[in-house]
Length: 407
Figure 1: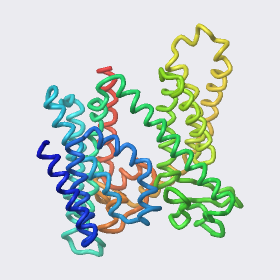
Figure 2: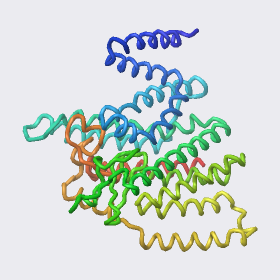
Figure 3: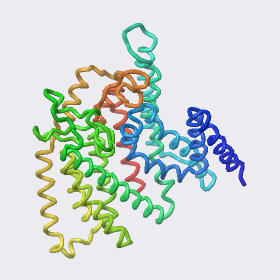
Figure 4: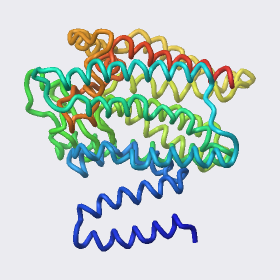
């Protein structure tokens, strides 16, 4: 038996004893054990991380009552697993290599983030003023958020070693999307029947704001007032905006499985999941998801079936509907929410270096007040300013270019 396995057994027995006499130490020991297991079995840890993430908002707000420490739970899986996976990869093949253009763009992003940490967060920490909290610790959490998860870009290629790995993860995505969308439909039912009150009875601007006080069954902030035709559901996520993008991203993966999975039973499950995703997007109250999820579902057919022209009658109706749907959506697609958040950020004068790393990061609120921002690019602009936003866009553009070049 390996030394690591003996260590795991000893720690597990120690935790059982501590759980009886010192529960707080047992929790700490449990986190240490999770780190050891994640490093020892990195692929399993990443699978568990993938399963955990769609339910993180539900665990944080429904199970742990909004405990800010819960936002760090995923890191006890992620960072040890990342180190372990790189270690395994180096032993099996060659050291992990990063294309030079991507390496430079990530370095530039890191430099600008570090510049904000030093010139804004550190300045807030040491200069006299009415700044609340501990800005430098907020900045470190913000830096972890910006830079710490970039290695996930390469994790997929390390996990997908064979075709069977691709099918496994594809089917796992389908099951996760099916469960999450099913729970969101139940959430909607509880709100419409009045079992969950939602935001009924609120007045003024509070009518239009999703709030944690209205949380229902799963997920976090909810806005639901049928008398004023207001609905914004979070599904299993922290906020409605996060849920919207989960639905959109899931539509790509589930549609690909529905059209391409070699197993006919998994194809049927994928089509069922696609139906659930479409229904969840309709009841979510998120215009972006309502428009994009059905569109993605339809257009994916033409992407994965390049020979569709040989049988045009079979898909002619779908094609016409897809074109009309895209044109209409592009005309009426609502950008008001994003525009409002950008306008608000500009009133805060973020400048070239922003208002400080972590200043709009939910996990950093343990060290000071943070702004709740549901949209990603306004959040970047608020925290790291114009230079940080441009450097992040540089990483995105470079990554896209490198992937297409290597593909």
